[in-house]
Image (cartoon, rainbow, N blue to C red):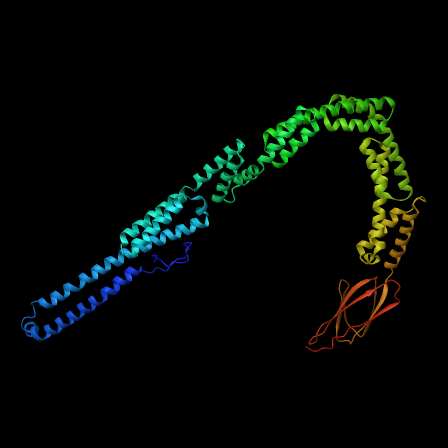
Length: 492
């Protein structure tokens, strides 16, 4: 039987220790002996009472030989048992140290990367279990201690093992030995599952054979002058392993050859188109050449030949569109055209003046629309004043702007209605104190008429000993009169 009651995996949760069967039998054999010794001691004590009591009474200062022998016999048995129990306890403590360390290392995966130390420590513990079962507790403790020391050294070697595994993987990968590299990186990940270098290395090693296949195909295509195919193969290799330097150098090499051929052909086409006056074709060819070599002097010369004609054409088109959008009162579209003109000719006075004019019209149209969309916004004194200033500034409007002129006229009507006060008749009981928020206190009365501009108002009634009342009313333009009852009638 094992020294401790634990499962096959050495779980740290199974820590209840039990003595081996041999120890149980030894304790069972010792029990009759102890009983016999106890009976003998009791008989000796009885005899001492009968035969030695007179002597003890006569000479109380002399110690009894019988009692002395009894006192010296029992501690010898206790000391022997105590030494055995102490050795057993020490062995159990050492085993617990081992189990705790083993459980922690097992969580860290040491059973996968810790050989041969892992298996050797298990063997030592098995040997210690046998010694414990034979009650050789000191030897068992030594075996458990050796196992603990072995696992301690194993734990301390983790970083070095990780470094060695990574170095082995890098070396194998550099030599295109993919299987060896995968094994080394897999070992590194067993030690540290989150290690980025191992994760990256394993990914590269797993595709190395495929990468080598693409490189072989690329070299063959390059020797045959099939540069597009060669670049495709190099790119495929880099897709699998973007850090492969041979693939990167090969793709750069064939890409440079392809780009030179493409540039020469595009420049020839661009110059021919300029000579023939084919502006669109010339621009397309120059763009193709610029995609390959954007800083080439030949491109700059050809672009300067094209720039002036293109500029004049684009400015004229913007000017025509801006004028049409203004006639249609599409202020945002007109602004875009004037802004585009200024990107072409930053100092164009025509574009600057047009941009200022259309921006002002767009802002006025939005502000007028703000009040037309919701006339209740005019019920604020500040907004009413602002709307009035808009109408004043917008008049007179150009006859070429009928949409904006109509909107301003409708706003003027709404302003007039919002500026005309209306009657509010409040009836009360002469006991309730009446007040209108933001207007003032009206006091106690039975009926009172108040002139208010259109808007939303809160009327409050208060009376000692009664619950306050609150009314929210809305006075709209066109209302002949508004009546309201305000009474505090609910006692508190």
